Length: 320
Image 1 (tube, helix red, strand yellow):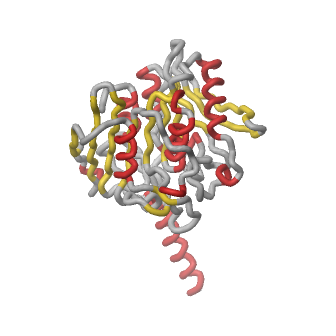
Image 2: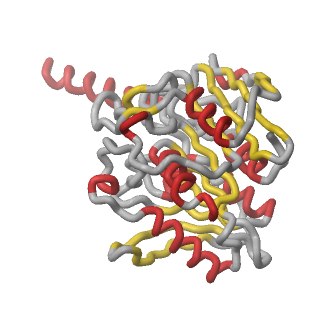
Image 3: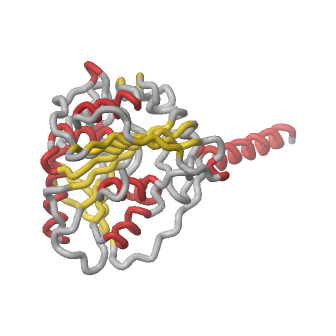
């Protein structure tokens, strides 16, 4: 009987830890005018998949936003974990959004030491992005020569690769919880084309260190060295020919955001692509949204900034 009691207690403790660290509320699907599609295409001899959404009656030449998920995720995961906000924004502002699926739930980014299967097998993810843009142009009539790209974690690293290898196809990029590869760990050619860039990083990120260093999955599965979040932003500031910050502000705080604080720093100059750096003081390895909370295992969430909204505003010039 004593053993049974101990097992019951252990089960309760495990369930409690799971509920606290791993459980997250399921966001409600918004009412949308169009239907999402789940499709397959072959690129480089591999079957690749994606989810896409476009509003009903989308006009030809509309923008395309691609959203790239993190490691161990897929497109549907990042779609859900951003509260389906990109879909709602697509309805409101008349653009198409695509959520590509990485090869075996990961991307072949620029980090030489990254251990994703896509990196080890040198999967042609840039080719996949280009082919997907062409396919969505055929399906929806979107402008596949001016792509907006946003990514989280490993997906943010993939966005950096796109900026290095196909900048002529990009209109702007955003990277969340991802810093540029550092030094000898960068396997891509240096970026040479200025682009509008938004970065967002938490100072308490347990996976991609805000101050730079080795990226790991809680001490396992090393993903290579990265620059600090500040050095990452400054790399783009220099590339875009910008100088000192033109605006720095702390966003209004919401009580449900706990001890986090969000600081937005803008670098802008007439005729040059802007850079905006969001620093989430006390924030974890998360995509902050208006309502959705990430798993506590990856650090604190904040609701002081709504990443999908500020990303789209930045991309379209409504905020800088």
